[in-house]
Length: 287
Image (tube, rainbow, N blue to C red):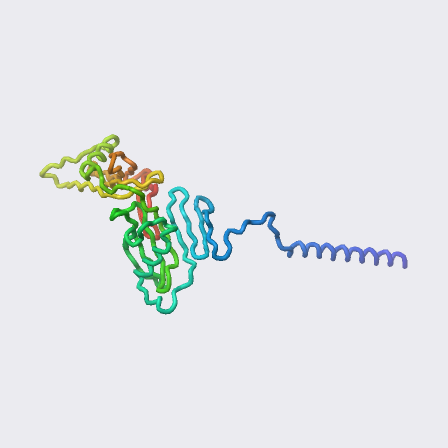
């Protein structure tokens, strides 16, 4: 009997020790800190700026001590800049919003690759939200001509510009802003191209109660395949139903791009609208 009791005591002692050992192992496994299998290269030290952009899912990232800049890899346009500099202090706080924005754009013109920010960014609108942050929209231009699809919003307080977002293209180099074609010639070429797929009906009876809207053509700088082109942005109405947006090379007369902007009852069509930041975007839609 005594031998049986001793045997049972040893079995229970062994089981207890084994269980405790397993618990300790499990506990250590859970709290052990994970380690990286590879060491990552340090991308910046102190105030040293990066010399190259890093590729991140179609976006190029460049970061220095003072700024973080994002570029669209496809178009090369700057789409975001974060200002990491400290806020203004003392007498600098007396700067107006206009002066604050002008100084910021001048400071980041290297990242934007803009030759003359004071002349190439035209104010469009400005509003202040409930948190006291001012959102000011600017249109990029070149020698007084709008750069199509290039607008930015500066988000600022009275102390600093915090963010820039939107789309900014590099200042064109040696681009002539004198068109070889006038507006009327451009409109005729645009309608001739539309006649391949639409009915051109511009004649109007003197007694007709229906009036045709006038076609419109405005010079813009249009980026096509990564290159700036002097172009006409035209709103053409070949007949009473259709409305087309056509981009035509103002030098050669070549059709660069076009899309049907007609309201339809069914089917997929391309249209433009403002996003949450107030920028015009093109996208496919259906009703």
